[in-house]
Image (cartoon, rainbow, N blue to C red; front, side):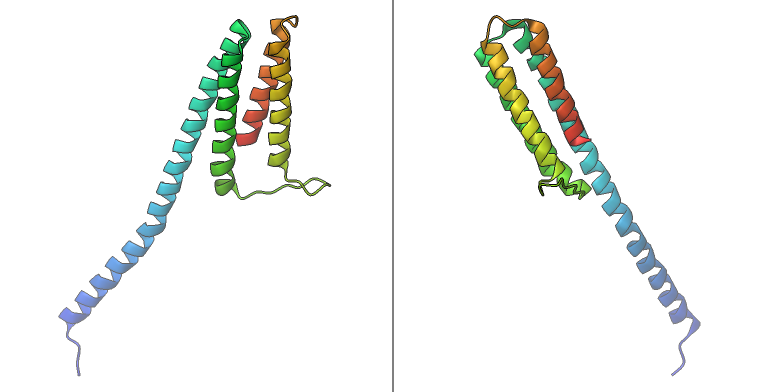
Length: 146
């Protein structure tokens, strides 16, 4: 059986179309990943701005309500950074005790939050100490998601 030139042309066109479809699939996948990463970075930056504003309230008013709101924002930020950041990066670093580095940072953040609570509740300490602790917490959070 002889294949006509017209059939051969149609088969070639179909093969080209299939190869174009296959080539565009990874491109679309990479675009979706890039957009998801961009949205996540925007969310983390928004949370960091909220944390900064709430930290200024804690420094200014030194109330338990502002401190509780600040702690909730820190908890939300850590959850977002760990939940989405670890899924995207897939990097692990362990210390001698077998703990991973992000868990160490989270423990440090928790310790600094406890220290901040003690400082805010102790009315005799000045605002510089509160500002220093808030700055340390912010630095640890930035270190967590970068």
